Length: 185
Image 1 (cartoon, rainbow, N blue to C red):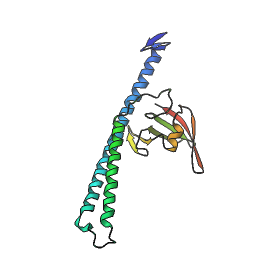
Image 2 (image 1 turned 45 degrees about the vertical axis):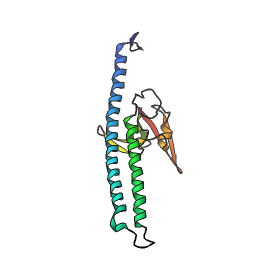
Image 3 (image 1 turned 180 degrees about the horizontal axis):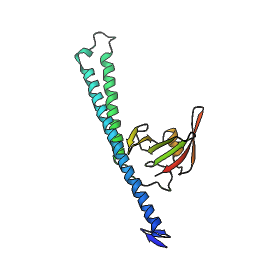
Image 4 (image 1 turned 180 degrees about the vertical axis):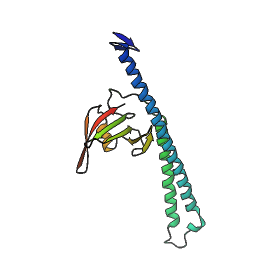
């Protein structure tokens, strides 16, 4: 029996395979997180622009109330406040993604940081990254569409704690959809 970094192997070849798989998944995830961060930065730029537009509208001379029932200025101020809150949320999401510690989930239960491929009943594959935030965001990474899921979403809740090969059923309203977990890394 051989050993590599504390891992006992019958031959050194399985240990090498384990190293290559773990390295690839971490490298893949690093690129995926970089692509997610880029998408979140783009979202932040748009949020800043929208906030500035709303502030300009709220303080414009044309928005001044002409009579007591004219609420355009008040509505513009509410919109500016909402856009400012959106900027704060974008900044929080960016911080969470930049500080996410990546690890391999090979032979581990699905949790935040896992890259998951599932297949539905029609054998259609979908790729997900279990993220701490930004659920619903879709990014292109290494020529693959990857959707961000949080563990608070129905599918995220169903996948949390599952392993490669498990089946999950997601019920939304009166409809149920079954997925097979194909890959977890």
